[in-house]
Amino acid sequence: MRQFTNPIHILRLIDGAKEARGLTVIIDVFRAFSLECYLYDRGVKEIRPVGSIEEAFALKNSLPDSLLVGERQGKKCEGFDFGNSPSSIPAEQIKGKTIIHTTSAGTQGIVNATHASELLTGSLVNAKAIADYIIEKQPEEVSLVCMGTGGTRPNAEDELCAQYIKSLLEGSALPDIEEKIRELRFHGGEHFFNEETQEVFPQEDFWLCCQYDRFPFVIRIQKDAHGYVTEQQLL
Image 1 (tube, rainbow, N blue to C red):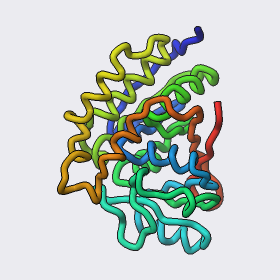
Image 2 (tube, rainbow, N blue to C red; image 1 turned 135 degrees about the vertical axis):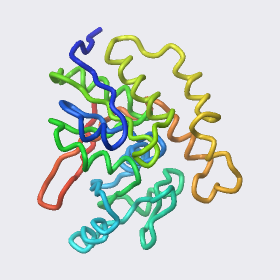
Image 3 (cartoon, rainbow, N blue to C red; image 1 turned 120 degrees about the vertical axis):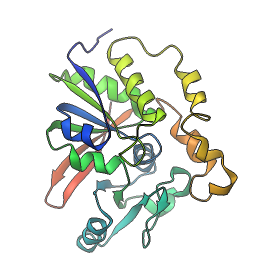
Image 4 (cartoon, rainbow, N blue to C red; image 1 turned 90 degrees about the vertical axis):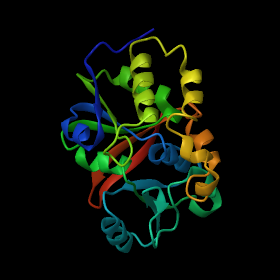
């Protein structure tokens, strides 16, 4: 079984994104980059991550047949088509569309990872695909950036995702990954089970984001004339 033996750095938050070098995975499990996997699975044309709400609206003016998706403090941004909830975006309304995506943590990591040689999004739902891609590419170094909550506070789910990807790269998947994911319900994912916040954080989102290794593709981030753009690459 092939492994990755070059340096693997686990970094954190926006400062970590700024420090990232080499092939860099920007991790946001709840919910940004889990959502992006589901969006590609539901047939979107492309996803364009941006840092600010203002940039999102400006880009939509340049790309009129696009949809605005995103959140601040978990809540859908005012004037956007959808929030950041994978259970709340129906395939029939997004198929073939360009998605402009901004979030409090995940997309902030993308725009701050200016020294990365290559960028991927990271989540549990495609963690194995990410590890397989890295092993195939064999970059000189890898940075796994846990974006945490709002890009300012570490959280359990992104840390777990980074450790899981690292373990796969080193040739031995975490033996207790399923138990650790179940623990997220009580340590990291509690807000998805609060009856008072179901409109913003539906319980179904927790389960969708925790379906580890569900998707056999990575999401690569590149740049074009309009800014950042992602593409789905099957393994």
